Image (cartoon, rainbow, N blue to C red; front, side, top):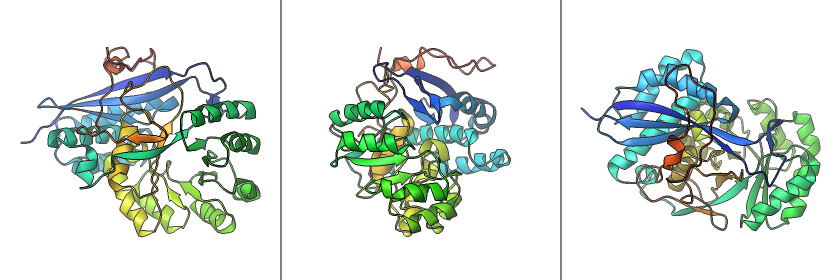
Length: 382
């Protein structure tokens, strides 16, 4: 019998943003810290893997879903066939929905199991997926929302000075977008994530002012308005992207069949981990659509995006680097872009593990009930 899952531990993290650049927000709410859920899986023979569930303000919800629904279906099961276990768990939990916090929690376990698989084989996850993988990848800085043009300019100047040749705004007001363009200059590629803010008619009216973007991400409400995205593509110039809020491979098929996107953006910590993420690449390839993995994370979810993109990504693939200017880093100095490129970690599995501080100084899921997020991780090695 192969090794089984012996323990699954949830580690909620809260890392504050530095105060030098005020005004950060997401989805209309002030942003003062990055919350996420790390998941540590330990096997019966002592191997440890790390995963990450999409968190932010939903971290407590993902942690509860992990503890009450996902973990009981995973513990004591073999780790050798990840896809079979994930399929089994999805089938048992489908009645609760095929996305959201439950899928985020399952994503974290899946990523951790792939980390273990790579460690057991002695190769990075990219090596498990492909015989040839990139050694480094271009990345773009993904900013919070700053709204006010002066604040947008200040943030853009920081990332350009850091050496990024591409950046993403989370803005839906033209004044903020134009301020970013003016500050960055014509040589820096610009992505705009409109946060599902607009109707088709509103987006069509703004399209002329958005020409020249690398792509326009999630412009429409609701995000599952695939027909509206297709209409926007047909009637305007900007390249359209979507996918971070798509929860299943079948739904990705519908998105692509609708002709809704020029770029597709699956999100490993939201759609089921590496097991599901890897399926999107051939599906998108059959439609001639490039994959740009959504990786608005700082931990194992980011590493999963890097490893899978290194193995399966196309020539234009880029990594999303969440630029939040945090007070601490989950991986310390081990993972950081240099001049707009990120090295693909060559170590086994994900290639890095969180610093000891990340799992010594934060509340645990047990004993019940789950405490509210508290504390703050200085994720540097002790």
